[in-house]
Image (cartoon, rainbow, N blue to C red; front, side, top):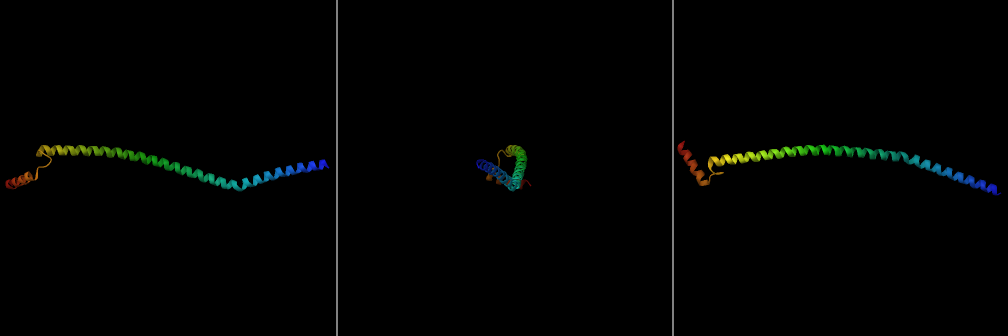
Length: 113
């Protein structure tokens, strides 16, 4: 009887192992497509984000170039302004004549014309 019992135990263990392997295969089969879909979705999201980051880098470089040009133009406009102010000062002796002097200059211009 002990051999019969031992055989039953061996058969039960074998049956248990087969059931575990079968259950594992069922779980893998059931969820593998879902996992693959999620992994593909995740990979797609990563690629989209990488493209966005790359495009943002390109836009950042363009904006830096525009800023450099803008700073150069600002510097030139300041130079032109200073040149205009210098010419005005050399012509009039000041940035603008006081109101009394302007009035007198206008009257002189009217008399001469």
